[in-house]
Amino acid sequence: MKRAWFSTRKKLVAATAALAMGHAFDSGCLSSEIALRFREAYAPGLTAGATAAITDPQNAEDGLRQAWAALYDGIGAIITPRSADSSGSRR
Image 1 (cartoon, rainbow, N blue to C red):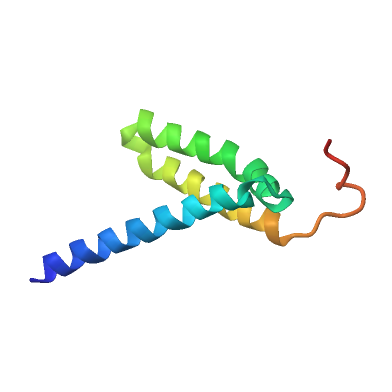
Image 2: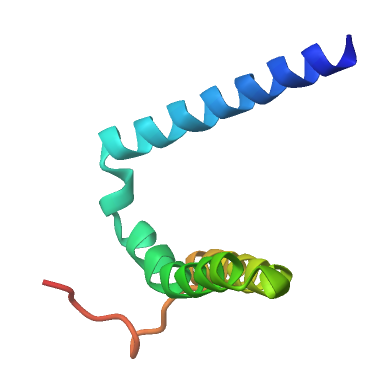
């Protein structure tokens, strides 16, 4: 009985995540300056970490740690304000 509840909960979480991502794509949220800063900080580390975890199963934990560190770097890029020196027009 507990397994069926977990399965239902897992489906609900997946549906909620899909709905949130769909809304982010539809509303233009991912093209904002904050999203750009997040992607610049997060994407390279995520790609390297995921690649390391997939290609080297013996050291998959290290790859996952690298991916999590990239996520935290991305969040840090959003939270930390840019100084006048580092911000410029991106046209």
